[in-house]
Amino acid sequence: MRLTRVPVTALAPEMELPAPEARHLSVMRLAPGDPVLVFDGRGREARAEVVHLEALRAVLRLVEEVSGTPETPQPVTLAAALLKGDKLSDVVRAATELGVARIQLLVTAHADVRDIGTQKLVRLNRIAQEASKQSRRSVTPPVLEPVALSALRWEGQLYVAQPGAAARLTDHLHWESPVTLLTGPEGGLSAAEVERLAGQGACPVQLGPRILRAETAPLALLGALVATGV
View 1 (cartoon, helix red, strand yellow):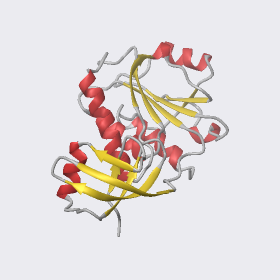
View 2 (cartoon, one colour; view 1 turned 90 degrees about the horizontal axis):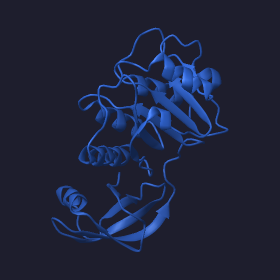
View 3 (cartoon, one colour; view 1 turned 120 degrees about the vertical axis):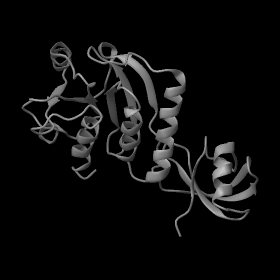
């Protein structure tokens, strides 16, 4: 039987859930004594059981910690330009399922969107948490507030999706250091932006012969990474 998975702030002998999660357990018709799986979003997961359940309040008791789903050998960051409408929601959801460790939003020269409000950032983080729950990850990647591309800092390898680039991700990717994957906005990255990143050690890579939509490119890049078998 597949157990219901529940996000918690931290593993503790006794854990009280927020109202939305309590409501979810009520909808699932769980009752005191029923087992669940809990995860803290930072890699720890445990078996627990329901101690108390009301429509808006639930208390769980820790039973035993278990091994979470394996993560990539090195952390993977998705650095994605701000996009119009609700496209970032789909990017965050899929990137979480594909194993990123964090998502850094970027403001770029050709971006139509220059900022997002606090509520939208909260919503994107909630989407990441739901995607972690659905994909059975014990890690929830944080979605970080936007920074200017010029202010982006990374550790290890940086691969930039760029149409016409000669290299492919799999030509250079290794797992000896952290990985950052960077994708641009609807209008693409400017030549100056790509040149500056390359001058700082980034590697521009192609995603095949077609021009991809801005919301498709991050997933194609992550798909190439996942295809390496990690």
